[in-house]
Amino acid sequence: MNFFEAQEQARKASRKLVLWFSLCVLAVILLVYLVLVGSTIAAASPTSTEHSIQPAPGWWQMELFIGTVFIVGGVILIGSLSKLARLSGGGAVIASDLGGRRVDPSTNDPVERRLINVVEEMAIASGIAAPEVWVMDHESAINAFAAGTDPSNAVIGVTRGTLEQLTRAELQGVIAHEYSHILNGDMKLNMRLTGWIFGLVMVAMIGRLLLQSYRFMRGSRDSKGGGLILAIVLLGVAVWIIGSIGVLFARILQAAISRQREFLADAAAVQFTRHPDGISGALKKIGGFSDHGKIEAAKATEARHMFFASSSLSSMLATHPPIEERIRAIEPKWKGEMLKGGSDPVRCEDLQGALGFSGSSNSPPPIPREFIAAGKLHASGVPGPYSPANNPNNESSATPPPIEPDAATNGQATLFGLLIPAEQQEQGRRILNGLGHSSALIELAIRRSNEKSALASRDKLAQIDASLPQLRQMTPDQGRLAITTIEQLIAADGQIDLFEFMLQQVCKRHIEVGIGLRNPPSIRFKHISQIEIGLANLLTIFSACTNDADALKPALEEYALHTSRELPIVEMDFGRAAQDLELMDASTPIVKKQILRLCWLTANQDGEINENEAELLRAVAESLGCALPRSGQAFADLQA
Image (tube, rainbow, N blue to C red; front, side, top):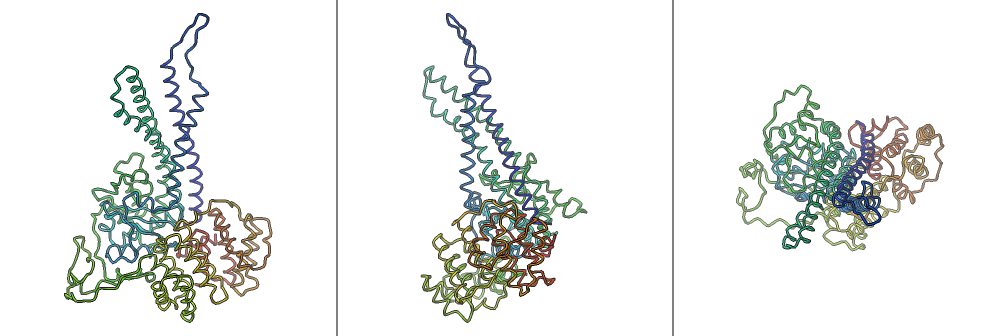
């Protein structure tokens, strides 16, 4: 599966969305115009004077048509733009609207701890920074969603039923499916679709308001007032019916755009987890569960195309392929049996760091084994939170645990600790103190420096990615200070290498976009030659790290082959590289793939990509707002 091509398909689908939305708006405008012009014809009758007969108005009335276009089109456009502006706040807006609750990354709740670990594991497998995690506590069905306008402000939400009815492997399959939607560009497309659909729904809402206004006019008894009320009621009915047709168009649009992307996400989930039974088991449980994937939240309808499974029991205008088809695509020999819901017990190791890949950025203290052995369980079959009151050894006199720092402080301490070498801790302490950081954060950062200073580059990038959900909880002022701190810590030793520079750019982008200091860039560059000066600088910096004088040769040859131009030779300039990367971030997915391929060709001059070079390529990808999964397929995509 070529993830860059999937992203380009999503971008093209976004263009189709604009076209279809325009046609839907035009259809609604024409229907409203026909109702209004029909009303004027019915209300009018030919009148005569002594010298002439005044004919009844015809079906073409220029002023009425122009007025309808401006009013109806304006209502739809304003509704859509206002919704899109609100959604620019990221996936947390959708999660909150659906009644979700943000999960603290350092939670000690067993099932939530397991969820956080699975999310971190899939972040590492997919090459995407870990998103925020939300739980819809009041939803018993099995379902999940991914939402956001960029990986830096993405969230993954799951229902309480998902936590209580799925095994760990099945939960991993569901989360991997949602990561695929982030990686493939579906998430951004879905957010746009939600905004445009809201504009079409606005017409029906206005019709409903006109009908509801009847209650406040019933006091008028004179014939003139009665006629006005009747006219308003009839207009309300007509606008509501037309608006409902607009809603129908919107639902068709939802279904047409989203159905085709689900099979792709299922396949990617198998690729990430290497365990097809996980996602197929989750689908079988949804098929066998009485509520299926039904979401009860009031705003679920407008977000139904975002869910893992259809949120409606109706098959009409379904936004997802039938469950049976999705299962057979994964298990061709499936015989049609569904499964009953039920989670496996949470293991003690589930409550520690992210399993199978690396430790959590802030692993909470595990629940004692003797407490688990004592059988202190919730009804769901998982161990309950530990406290002195229910300690099986009755250690009631134990000293209360220290107050844990908040998520934002934890995230900053992890990030700063990764950037402070063990031998430069005093210098790091002075920098943090000089910038006004609290003593608690400084001491925690130094502790993290001791814990993580020996980590390899691969693990440092993974740790930074895992800390991002906590960093997104910073205030704007904290975010700006954190960016300044990162710059000073990296520059503290008087020199900067490419990996440190890329880490700085990755952190800066994720923080700025993640907490809303700036929006993700719009597409500006559709051909690689449009950013060739910045590309030449990046490749020059890249080749300098290989210690190979001929490292640039393959990249220069390929650039000339595909553009019929020679890539300019420039002096290495770290000072302008940040600006160059920001420009490249505004490129199409295919151009970003070409940039990464040229970087790969430069690093692969000796015939192999070592671990540090692989992580450097991933850092470049993250700074461009895309990702390179840690499967071998990612580099195979770059070789194509």
